[in-house]
Length: 268
Image 1: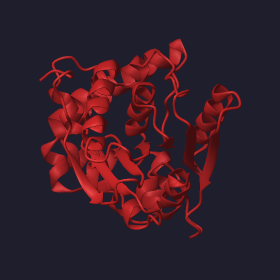
Image 2 (image 1 turned 180 degrees about the horizontal axis):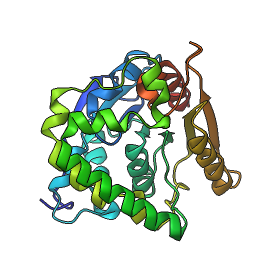
Image 3 (image 1 turned 90 degrees about the vertical axis):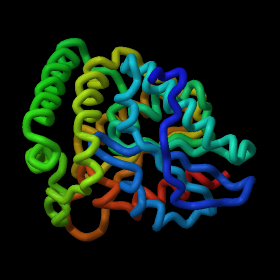
């Protein structure tokens, strides 16, 4: 399968009228479209909500950020063909945020919402180290399988909010089936291999949301705000209001906060 021919599958979580916003959402690494269900259920705006599956990217003959972004662009265009006049709100969580940022120049969304996403290129030394780290992660996933790998993955401080809420370690069987795909995606689409700065200038408005205890990603939001140089980019700090940490897994930790940002993004 080539990126030129690829249209990724998606699920429709909400429907809307022809002139109401169209939200297209991209999940994170090791995720699946239904990860967005908690967010979609809390959305107040009248908008359709379409969650794209990213594991099938692994079927592309050539897998790099350019080809992955091209597949996302074609998929979003296919979704929008159903309601071509609807304003596009493109959103992505973590890995999906990197893809959303990479696709922005071609799609020119009315609004771009990045959730816990690192989209700017790393300095050279950090990029090389990140490639090594992700190669090791891919090898561990292939060796240990998804269930064991995810238990180890969620021990990282960036998932403290997930652990505090008792969600760490839970994993749908459908993710296990996609293990070989994520092995390839983690290895080939490492942030250490993303050398270019995404062109966000064609997004009319941008939001960046990170957990209140997710320091690295809050810093990424500020870097993006400086990059936008006066164009609209609002950095939102997510607090679930339950006195527990709010870190990286915001779709589960603070779905209401993410939904509020999407509500703002859907407002003309």
